[in-house]
Length: 83
Image (cartoon, rainbow, N blue to C red; front, side):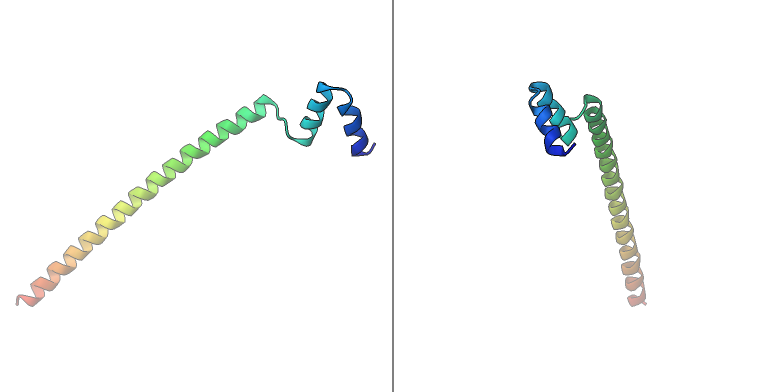
C-alpha cells in the first residue's frame, strides 16, 4: 500500500486518523519518550555546568602558577642585579 493511500485512509478516520498520521510521521511522541528526553537534557546541562566549573578552576590555577613563576623570575633578576 503506498504511503498516500495509508494517509488517505487514516485521515478519513477523523481525529484518531490525524493522530495516527502525526504519530507515524514522528510529529507526536509518547509521554515516556518526552520525559526521557527532558531527563537526559537536564543531566547533560548539569554535566556541562560541572565541566565549566572544572575549566574555570583550571584557568585560575594556571593563572596563579604563572604569577608565582613570574614573581620567582623577577626575584632572581633583582638578586642578580644587586651583586
